[in-house]
Image 1: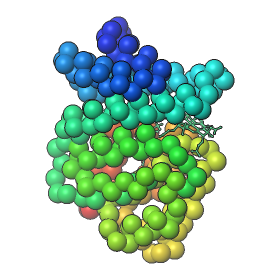
Image 2: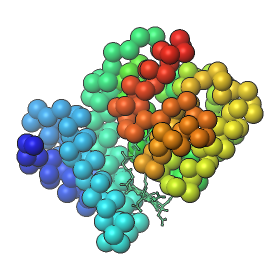
Image 3: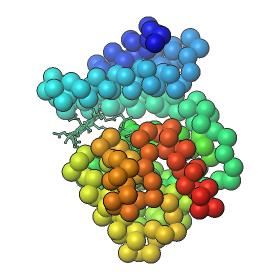
Image 4: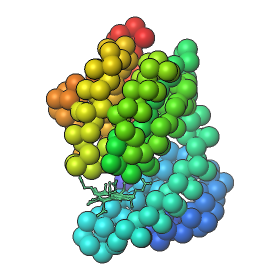
Length: 220
Ligand code: B12
């Protein structure tokens, strides 16, 4: 394993400290030093967020710190966005994806990354945001007729809301006409199957791969 680049180590520390201007400056510096956007994301921002999550779990960090770390993460992601999207590009006809974090759940960083990667893969992405009620998904799918619907949940307590959302789409007669992909840290392939989703992906890069596979399989 190669050692992590010094700028990325510093970037992870700034992320941990919730220093948004520092994160922004270090993302720019890392890119200026010739590092790839994916590397800056993985070994810098996500590495920092992993430690935030670990220390939060251990009771060493509290919500206010996590909120500022998340803001700093957003600042960094926005800086990397065009490059990440470019790296993921190379797809055919434009397709639409409706994305959202399910009702009751405020976590939106991972879903945002999935959106950026899908954009890069040529999708027109309609991001409904976080805490999205099933009715809003239903309305968006009715109006937009997307090829893909992506549901995100980061809490074990909001995972059942994925089931409710899918059930509502089914009730509205809209589930069969689209492909529903689910994800988020606690979500598994078995859960996806159980709740009637068409697929699951563990991260933003595989979300694009999985979406492509599923759409190709149904000729969409
Ligand atoms: C940042 C954060 C927050 C921020 C969120 C800010 C924001 N704008 O998103 C804030 C402070 C709001 C927050 C609040 C809470 N949080 Co929080 N939070 C986190 C933390 C530290 C990081 C999450 C994150 O952004 N990770 C980085 C992203 C890139 O990863 P990701 O979300 O997993 O996404 C990737 C994949 O999962 C996948 N993916 C995600 N979505 C989708 C969707 C599709 C369709 C696909 C295919 C793939 C996919 O691709 C993504 C990119 O690769 C995690 C710990 C952790 N390590 O996960 C805890 C964590 C998720 N939170 C937790 C908890 C308990 C809470 C609170 C209940 C705390 C409280 N006591 O109030 C509240 C709940 C608020 C609510 N109602 O939602 C727990 C959840 C435990 C559980 N399993 O239920 C965790 C795991 C921390 C812990 N270890 O205890 N949190």
